[in-house]
Length: 215
Length: 149
Image (cartoon, rainbow over the protein chains, first blue to last red):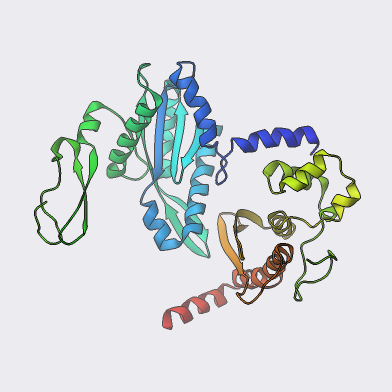
């Protein structure tokens, strides 16, 4: 490697994720500026994260969790970036963002089942991680952050449908999406937390499920 | 600080000097940020090759180089003030994590501490893990001993 190549590598490193072969959040921010200005070639925002990742970390250690992120990143790189020419980023933690244009969508949807079971061996034990996706299509008026929020909502629905699935955001999906309701009990100090469909969601929870005290 | 780069630290081998590494590996390390600002400044300022060559390799660089020479791919390098943890791949799609922790009663300078962590990792911790990897029966026995305790 000569000095020029080293400088090129330095530039690459600045925009490459530290855990996967994908691009990092800094690189995504650069593309977001173009998307919001209507100058990006991408009009489909895909969001995906690992299913039950916290439990995976608890059961198998954070080192195994890092490996799960790495393995998923490698498959995204091989299946979506190399083959479909999508751009893929690890946003943070176990959250991934993939950018496509609508002509690539059919191919992308045919690949998501690869993420129903991602396996690797850690300390001679076979481990499995899973992922689901949601996506939103740009109408040319909605900002990237709103599109990403829509994709995240669709991803929650996808998780209920199964591992390796992908769901398109629609207004109906938004309406049926589960939202988190949280209420701290003053009486027993428990934290009450549950997921309720947005359309059925009350203003606040009514009764503490631990001590029966009314909120 | 240990002034002789080849002198052992409490019986453990210190990190190799930079001159032992290939030029490509050094430039790659600059780009990947394994070398600290002092190293980068020395390289950018055209410091004499001999001066650089006699400097010790930074800990992460030294560990990665050692694993590479052993044919093991480092997936993740985790550093704590008195510990080092390395997750590596020893076969396709197969990983293990090796760790070394400095005892509380050891009080060393920063430089000697990095030497101790390097030496302990390659002389003590890694060989133990490699024996487990190469001996599945022993691995099973260890597991059953743990569950019967």
